[in-house]
Amino acid sequence: MNFSNQLIVWYLHNKRSLPWRATNNPYYIWLSEIILQQTRVDQGMDYYLKFVEAFSTVYELANASEEEVLKLWQGLGYYSRARNLHFSAKYIVNDLNGVFPSTYNELLKLKGVGDYTASAVASICFNEPTAVVDGNVYRVLARYFGIETPINSTKGVKEFKNLAQELIDTKNSGTHNQAIMEFGARMCKPQNPDCEICPLNNSCIALSKKIIKELPVKEKKIKVKKRYFNYLVIQTDNDLTKMVKREKGIWKNMYQFPLVETLCPINEEELIESELFKSLLGTNKVNLKLLQNNSKPHKLSHQHIYSKFWLIKTNSSKNFNQTWQVVKQLPVPVLIDNFLNEFNFN
Image (cartoon, rainbow, N blue to C red; front, side, top):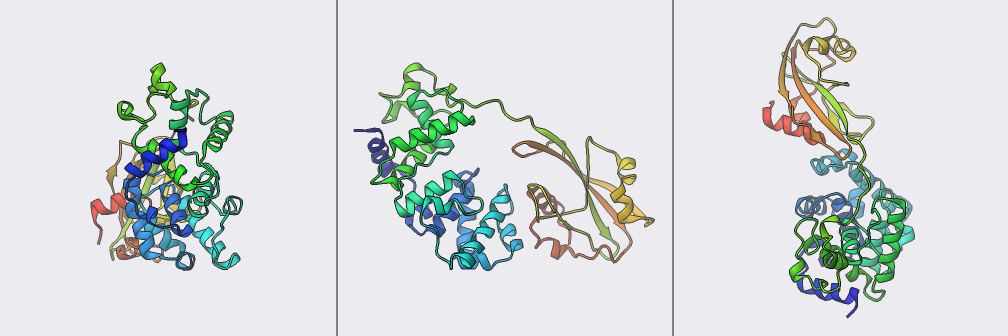
C-alpha cells in the first residue's frame, strides 16, 4: 500500500467530525481555511460557527460593514485575515457575480489567498490535484522522508511543495489533502507524536534514525521587537471617553484608546510631557492614575507589547464624546477588550 493510500485509510477511520467536512460548498471551505490559518481547530471552531450564522452566504459577508466583520473576528488575531476575507467576498459578489472561483489559479486572485488555501479549496471542492503544504504537512514529510532542508527557506518551500505534489492521489485529491493534514495534527504531532501506533512507523526515516525531535528544521527566527504602549483612558465628568481608529499595522481599522508609544517604559511625568497628552488635554484639569500595568507582554509573532492603561479623569469636552456603551460595540484588539472586561466601565 503506497503512502497516500495508507494516509487515506487512516483518515477515514480516525478523522474528526468537523462542520466544514460536511459540505463541499467553496464559501464554507474557504471561510474555514482562512479562520484556521495560524489558529488551532478548537479555537477556530466557535468563530467559524459564528461567521456561518451571521453570514450564511458570500453575499451576506460582502454586504456587511468592515466593523461588523472585525467585531466578529475580535480575539482571533491576525486581523488582516478578516479584512482580506471581507475584501474578497465583495470581489466575488461585485466582480464575479457571486460565482465562487473554481480553480487553483482563479482562487489565487482572491486577496489573502496563497498557495495553501488555493490548493485546499481547489482540491476539496473541485477535486483539482493541487497539494496542500501547511505546518502539519511539512512535519509529516520532513519526518517520514528524513528531510533536513529548512522548511522556511526558499529551497525548502519549493522542495516540500514538489514532493507533496508527487505524492498526491490525483483521483482523491481532496481526501488526500485532508488526510495528510489531519495525520500531522493528530498522529505526527509536534510534541510526543504517537510513533508506536503510527501506520507509517515501519518506513519512517526520522523514527529509524531517532531524529523525530530534530525535524522539521527551521532557520533562525526573526528577532522579536519590544514595544511600549501607553493608552490614555479618558473619563469625563459626564462619563464620556474617546476611541480612535488605527490607520495602520496589524490592528488596522480597529479601535483603541489614544496611544502614546515609547521606546521604553515611561512614568507619569513623561506621559504628561508627551505631545499627544498635551494636544488632547491642553490646560484641562486632570486626575491621572495608572490603572493597569502589564509587566507580562502581549506576544505577537514578531513583537512583544508591554502596555499601560492610564485613567485620566477630566472635565467634559466636545473632543470626548463617546459613551461606554458605544465603546463596547466597537471592534478592538484583545488587549483592550481584556481591559474593558476587567474594569467594566459603564
